[in-house]
Amino acid sequence: MRLKHCHNFHDFRRLAQKRLPSPIFNYIDGGADDEVTLRRNTKAFEEVDLIPSVLRGVKDIDLSTTVMGQKIDLPVYLSPTALQRLFHHQGERATAAAAEKFGTMFGVSSLGTVSMEEMAKKHKNPQVYQFYFHKDRGLNRAMMQKAKESGIKVMMLTVDSITGGNRERDLRTGFSIPFRLTLGGMFQFAIKPMWGINYVTHEKFSLPQLDAHIDMKGDSLTIGRYFSEMLDPSMSWDDVAQMVQAWGGPFCLKGVISADDARRAADIGCSGIVLSNHGGRQLDGSRTGFDQLDEIVQAVGDRLDVMIDGGVQRGSHVLKALSLGAKAVGLGRYYLFPLAAAGQAGVERALGQMKAELLRDMRLMGAKSINDLTKDNLRFR
Image (cartoon, rainbow, N blue to C red; front, side, top):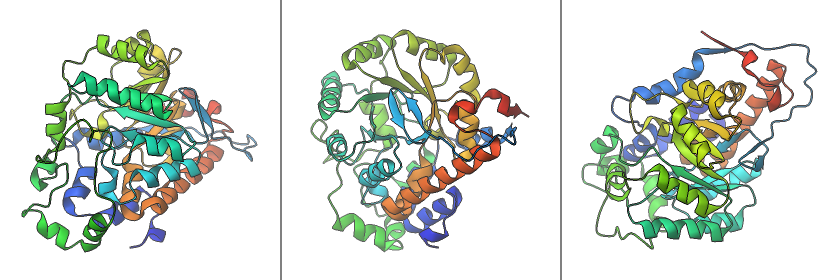
């Protein structure tokens, strides 16, 4: 199977699985506990039907939108995700370049493998810095200051990861950071030699947002241990309110699910929230962002920008979210599998397919712009 044979999310996933050693593929692919929420994230979109309008003169389609003050050409953005140079040696460099080509927003994670400063200097499209709240308050302040000095406009604080989800696939494969070749996993790497060759012949793996502050040379952390041991479970609304004030610009909370929390985010001055369950990787059995979207837009949609992520595999999924009032939709695995499969070329192919689906589906819906999409376009089964 080659990149040119990839026509949808599932094709990219299969190609990534062929190219990645099992521990790395399962890190991207897996969720928490029984993976009920992971599956539900996509299933939720399938339980709502679109009601198209016809004869609306839809020759010209405008897919652009503005979210948290950032003008983007597509109503989707590339969510900040960790460890991208483990999946492909280009990592965040491929992600950012592809996002810039399509005129949309991308994110760099606290667990990113390329520095946020490098990305901010190199690319003109909007960049989000995704921030984890560490027990070391000095580290938190230093990371925020560095983001501000880099010229990043949007801060995105992840609030659903104060302790690690139970990612049993990672426990079985021994997946950890910094990456370690273990005896148990050696066979998986032996049968995928090209990944290993790329890993050792390109720039040494690092976590530039954290390397100056946390010494992990003598340790090997699972993702669950990183969340549980280094992040601060005492983080409170007062802490976040202080961060919003200190940042002084667009500030977004990622991982909100309840309407009450959405109201509190608006009360402390957040400009956006992402309804997210961390891709089904934290609390298994939690609601999906799409299932909660209507309720939360009704509660706070006039006070801040509401976004969602989780389970998005098609342009029609995006249209359903926009019809319920989402300002934009975050993509995660949707671009990570193409990244793993083929680097920047893979991400560009996936974004090209998403744009083509959005244009086609907008015409079939009789909608000329994002503003034409409303709840009237939907029926819940």
